[in-house]
Length: 165
Image (tube, rainbow, N blue to C red):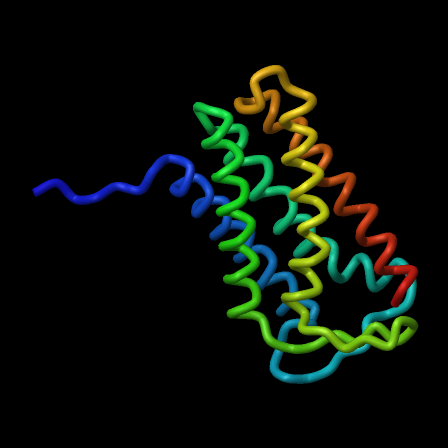
């Protein structure tokens, strides 16, 4: 009896999710933002954005670029990117504790949730730009376009958070 195999889009999404989640969890733990149930105030200005940057870029760029670059069809590219982002954010929420306080906005939010929301902007920008910027919507060129657009969107989201912190 043959063993069941995952569809290619799910396998590539899972690969991207695991790598992105590991980078996000380790970077948050290294900055002591994702440890325990402690409420940590996010530093004002660029320092706060730089603390969140590795996690946001990992969760935003990797799930958007890798499945799109490695896909064989447009639907595989989109489904892989969506599955990769969802799984990466779920892993990050599950394994990173702690809460961040955005003092200027008066918000206390879980660290993984804040990083997931910021990375959503990047993933959407990457997916949309890969579909509009490349003729096929999948492959290496579309993956490169998705990576650049997702990185730019992640930077803009981090600038907005640095203003709100």
